[in-house]
Length: 309
Image (tube, rainbow, N blue to C red):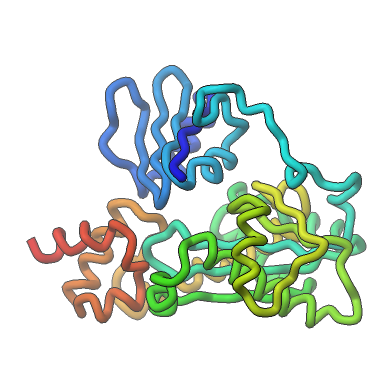
């Protein structure tokens, strides 16, 4: 269901948004600072300091930047649900955390990772520099991920664009994420036996109700001890570690694709991605593009127009 959410943001935050969404910028409407079109959401920042998020992914995208000022009906969004609260001291528990990267990028894979951070290891993770991956540069992410893989258990799943295109018609974005998060967590829990984590924190991308509904369609269902939090990396280092490993792998896959194609393969879903896809189309048409891009994105039609105009 499409949503409309508004944030009131400081100028510095809007400038950071502008930079973050650089590859997805579109035509700027009147009285606006910028407008960006991402998969499932359009973000428009206005001179007044208000930022409007519109689309099916409005809530998730807005949650990255702050608390909503207004909800779909224009009322103050002050409601909280059971899934918004975590047990006291949760950040110091031994926790499995999971996150994903690449779902909003036209080119490149979707990567999901689950990590296990024991309470005794939390000081070490901080020492290694584990924090919200949005606060880290790509070189830092690659270095930290390399260290993390040596010190904590993890399971990672990589859905190549070709595989993504095969399963996407039968899996909407949330069902696909549920399947991947569940499988990564299931595999990691098996690795840890007989040890069991005190909790499992999933970086929230849909409601707990929706997650559990989609979960019923999956084998190897992990159903107990689950917690859900948007910006989960702020609540436990296990999610931050998972995010870093995911991001590093995603970047490595983009680098690999760039070498294979002889062009720079960018992340995101903006103009640079359209242009790169157009070059791929000229090289080998859709049969080649399906190996590198999520074809159901609107970028595919844009790339065709560039390549064959």
